[in-house]
Length: 448
Image (cartoon, rainbow, N blue to C red):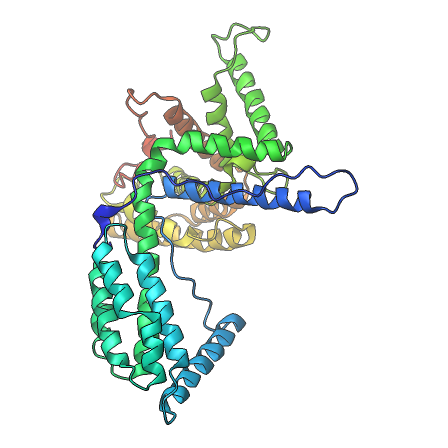
């Protein structure tokens, strides 16, 4: 990180100023509505950014770079080329024209100043002295502007401020001699340094955000709710459905006091069940809760991993049930078969058509590995009727209501539910043997 990392800010960042709420009389121009929408968007943006910093330890900003074959990229290249070609023409003219060069030096000075910390008093004073705008303009007017001398000072200043990861880029600047290329590369590296500084600031503020994240998000959501009372309707529906399911589950328990009991539901249990529902979300028939939108990508990725796990275990269970103990008790066989199943199902479980095709190929691969193991250890193969049966069972796993897939899915859900319900002081519930990564444990024992 930047060399001035010990001089980071210690105070929680204040929100950008919000637009003033206007209470216009009926019939006036829609400025109040526009102001409210912009303020609401500002609240959501601040909330999303703070939430991502808190939950994602790897969060960082990256320089935006459009696709190389996009229209935006081509237009950007044309504009940049025209600018630098114009600068080259100015410097090659007789006498040289330094108008564009002076503007670039002013921009460089502004960027360097933005990288300084409050404690850099001497460096700031030196920067104002060496890159004095009036002095540079006077030197340019008299043809006495020494770009290489100024570039050397700028590079030395960059070297003292940059993060260690930028040291090679700064060293490469010292090898450049062409003025246009030198200025272009200086601005490029300064852009990277600005990004580094922003990311350093984010990491510095992260501990403070962690301490105040809950209250901050609660306050932001309340502000959003005040501006748009209907903005959390989907969340309300989501929690009400989870509460209804939890009430039914509590009533169905053997030791339940009865359906007419007035004992309140546990808020934690309702919330746990609500988040479990997000792992089986149907976007075609359900609207995603607003309070979980910031984590939807993570939750969707987790749901896909769980779906893949259910399919993997279902294939292993069907294979074990059909082959008996002939090969699944062999050392290392389950691990090799699991790797093949994972490789063939990866990326195919999100679309029904892809899953059907993948399962057809998977059935053949499973039969191949089973027969190879049988040939090596017993000198025999599966009977043709057993091959057809196993192939058919595996190909039918594309159906979401397949009995084996349903049973395994319920076990996964039950394990996750038990994990969420346990207190921090309690040990985690034991993972069912069929879901472990202990590749030499026969699946029959885990799935019985």
